[in-house]
Image (cartoon, rainbow, N blue to C red):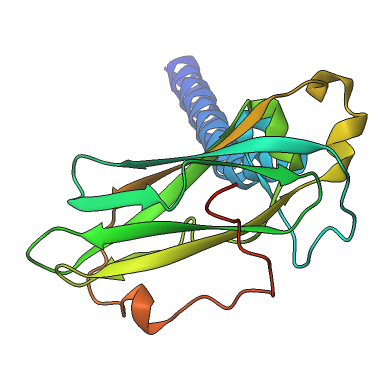
Length: 207
């Protein structure tokens, strides 16, 4: 009888240890999953992986004679009743030149709605050389019914692109934005809080 009790206790202790190990593994995996998000974001921003652009607080300070075509794309989720477009679909800029493009958004709904834009650059490998000084991406934008606003993007192409053999002869870079609806409905509209931009030359409409 004593042996049976000892066996039962041993099995109970073994099950408890197994449960503890399983719980620890789950906790570690959960923590790793949460940590992976910022780490992946940092990796993308550092390398330009997946078309992630770079950010800078000031201009490049160096302008080269080489030029490159920059195409601007605009998309809206079917769940957001907005019209969204760039002022110009394509332009040519000098490598390192400070440039400005305006995107125009209009709320075609009969009520105030809020959206947030994600972005990417193609080809993806060019993302590490597309540097944005100011943009509206990932910032919630609230528009009243029928309201239309200008959304500026200040950017330049990093001169380091000419030293990358994989970028030799690259004819075009495309900057693409997609607006999605968000739940927030009580923030002030973007027209009431205009972005503060550095002094930049606006891209000529005929170039």
